Image (cartoon, rainbow, N blue to C red):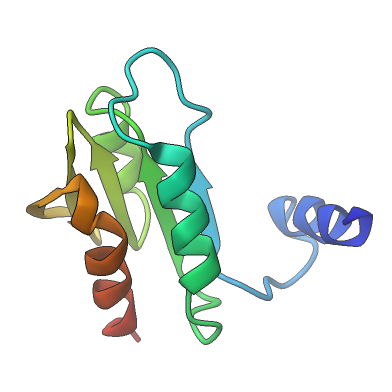
Length: 112
């Protein structure tokens, strides 16, 4: 665990090459209206290993989420029971919460 944390710190500082995609999520707050922790963990477990170059954001609300999701390769900004999928800064579509993980991973699978 400590070794992974060390690599994560070096990667965040730009001192070490990433070995997996960069998954960014918010710390959650009272505005979060989706099960963010569960969604992030499911994505992390199922994320393909060949997508090291991607930055992926999974944000819990529509206040800060859209801005953060626009700054990465692909991301989701959560709402009440749904999320907006963003790809390369553009809003793509609205996704029900129960489909977020599958649809995000499908989109990621098609990215090079």
